[in-house]
Each structure stands twice: as C-alpha cells, then as structure tokens.
Length: 279
Image (cartoon, rainbow, N blue to C red; front, side, top):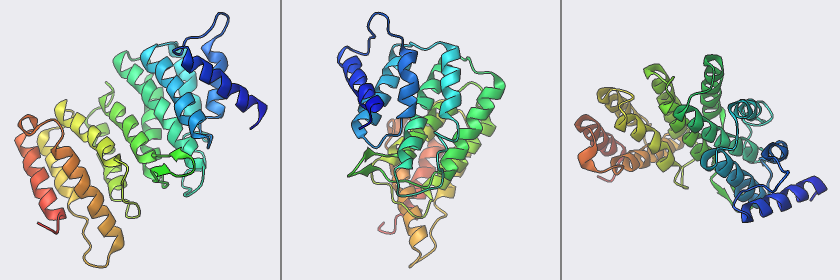
C-alpha cells in the first residue's frame, strides 16, 4: 500500500471512530481530494466503509459542504476519470470507480432537491450524465468475492431516484428515466441477483406515489416490460424476462396494495402473468 493511501485510510478510520468529527485545525476539504482520488480503490474497506461512509455523513447527515464546494465536487465526480472512467468495460476493477462515483452524486442531488442550488446548465449536465451512465454501464456485477460491492445498477438507480424528484425534472425527464430503466432491466446478459431490482423499483414507486407521471402512463410503460420474450432458446430474452418479472414483483409489493393506483396494480398483474411461464 502506498504511503498516501495508507495515511488516508488511517485518517478515515480515526474520523469514523470519532463520529466523523474533525479535530481542531482540520478541514474536511483537505481530505476530499484524496477521497476522490481513491474513490474506486479495490480495497473494499477504504472504498465503501471509509470513503463512501464519510461522504454520506458529511453530505447527508452533517451538511459540512458549502454549495460552492458541492458544485466543485460534482464537477469532478461527473468527469471522464470518475463516473465515466473506462465506461463500457466489463469484468475489471474500473467498475469500482464508476459505481462509487455515482453514490456521492446521489447525495449531492438529494441536497439540491431539498434546497436547490444548481444552475440550469449544471442540472442539465448532471441529468444528461446520469442518463448516459446508466445506458452505457456494462459491468453489472453485484458483490465480488475479491473487492466487495460493485453494484453499479443499484447505485445508479439510487441516483436516478433522486433525479426523478428534483424540481427541474418534468414529465419529459421522467420518461427519459423510464427508458434507461427498461434498458437496464432488459440488458440481456446479466440476471440481477443482489436486489438491484428493489433499488430500481424505488424509482417507479417514487414516480407513482408522488404522481410525477400520470398513472395511465406508468401502467402503459409497465405493460411494455412484458414484451421481452423471444421464445425458447433465446437466452438474451430469457434473461430480460427474468429481470422484468422480478422487478414487477418488487413493485407490486411496495407500499401495500391499498395504496397502489388501480390501473397500476392491474398493469402489474397483467405484466407478471405475461412474464411468468409457470402460471
């Protein structure tokens, strides 16, 4: 382990032990540059339990960062060395950088939606970047025996759930989000088995509960998920069908049947029946 990384790990372990409070004379910005540098480190303790956990406490729970600092951090996280670092690659360690860059982006978006501070051009860039990331991320592995969580589909879904709730996200943005969600569910290569479907279901559940799109439109989109069965022997379509079926079930059991709009519940029943060959 290089000296800088070892020192960062030691510092973050101490900060975590001290409830994420800094000592006299320390500034959180002094640590941020190195945290971003090692945000995708293959060491799961450093990447997940220390760097992300520190961002979570400092941004979400303690609100340490000023709006200017959040803008600066967001610009770095969205660049080609972080969210889009070797985008499109599969089966290597670069996924950690991308998947763990999108998590603090979600935290920044949460701050923005609660108290908006991004300029229109900044929000547009953020929206376009998140949609592009979810379209182009091909490494969909969940938990790795060496390296721990990658979980790109789940982490990206968390950010899309925040995007859906931002005040700037009109019906057109909601529809763009649905398009990339469907593409991920129907990826044709990877069956989600680390509860990614639950995290993706959060997005559509949010749209439904907060009436971000009309119920009839969501019902129509759900019906479209059932159109992914290419018949016997088509492995790609088989994988897509499993993902869509599991997603439909996640959404059905979300929030209680009595709280679901009738047309959405009917669409879920119909789609599940179409996707389930064992009924």
